[in-house]
Image (tube, rainbow, N blue to C red; front, side, top):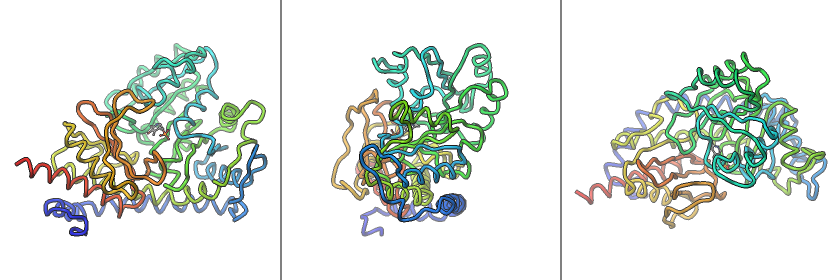
Length: 421
Ligand SMILES: *Cc1c(COP(=O)(O)O)cnc(C)c1O
């Protein structure tokens, strides 16, 4: 592999060391994968999935048996009353937006207790002006930042006891921030804290990037509604687009009414040939998440050895598939992204260039050579071009190919440094 990939000696030595050092960490991931694979297969058996479910509807999409079975499978996996799993959701951001519009009414308050929400939600909420935002409909927004990577219990208590809050949003993964992602245990504690004081508040969890990283999912710890993307973990790199919402039946139904139209809700929604791909995606998802996790862990190990600060650390317990790397300068960041691109199955010959992106404030560089446009369960590395140059790496459909991207990227940095000497 070394000659085949044209890796220099230093890269290869580091990789050999990583293989030995990371053995136990990888074994603990295999154990979680085994558990989650059983969870998925069990859901398929329970719903008696058969070839019939690969058929799909057009037009209104009434009585789509496959769609109904897929939603039942999701509900079983998440231990939820109900699920909405749709290709009519463009992406996770769209599913999050529809969930907020479904749950909130004029004069209601949305409270984020994990600081600033993900970039694409700023215009949805009205943190950034948009004539179609929740704010433009009179929905109030308040925010409580995390303190030392945990919830600010004092401020949360003060706020919910003195203001009427309809929905609390918890975003588990870090997005384009440098905070730590929030473990299931931390979320469980804060959800119980809120429910003891104000049981009527709806707890919504943005679960993007966290699915199948651990054994438990947020409904099991008391969340009311959970939202995520199908071009991330649960699509397994196979589902072509979409988002999911799982949770209490009455809330999921409100989201369905917002997604389609009042009166038709979840009854409509043609699947247009995608049912088999939705089923295959969730079937592969635990293994694909495992590949992505191992790819991130390898990157974490190698880049730490090269002196960069990385988060999480190689052997640290993980909440999501994302690895943050602080490059400190744009040259290393861009070189690394170029290497990731070179190691991708699609567009390996392309060079990633920083550009403006809808929904994001700074110029963003994105290295990704994916089968599905924008899919970040596939190996990708991106980030806004601003000090101190944090890169966010995630994905890798298989560890054996993900590692090649990482090795090529690390090799690029090592070679550039050697040339500079
Ligand atoms: C990626 C992400 C989203 C948006 O999902 P898309 O499918 O890319 O629209 C929302 N929240 C978090 C935390 C994310 O990481």
